[in-house]
Image 1: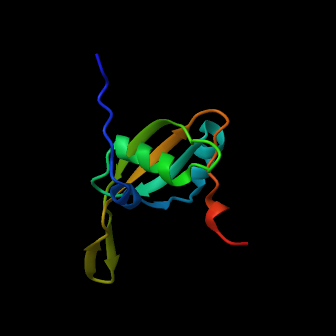
Image 2: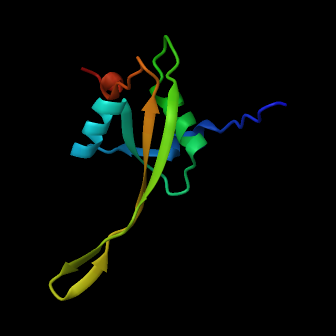
Length: 112
């Protein structure tokens, strides 16, 4: 029985990851479980997030291997400005677990 491997366009994968989430919880999870937290598009799926991370953060000499992806919907919050009530938008974040010995270098693309 063959496993169906779906291929995604590079344009779509470039739109899936929006930004890394830098927080105290994200740093703790990263150090303890070798995971990284990303803000992702609202319609992103787990296979798309995995393919996007492997495509965008793989060094030239070897392939980055993603072990697990967990996706969380962050609910919107009600905020007040005096007597006016508004809502912040909800968003989606992904916890991406890497295999042992793997690491993401965010500063690799910057010129120093």
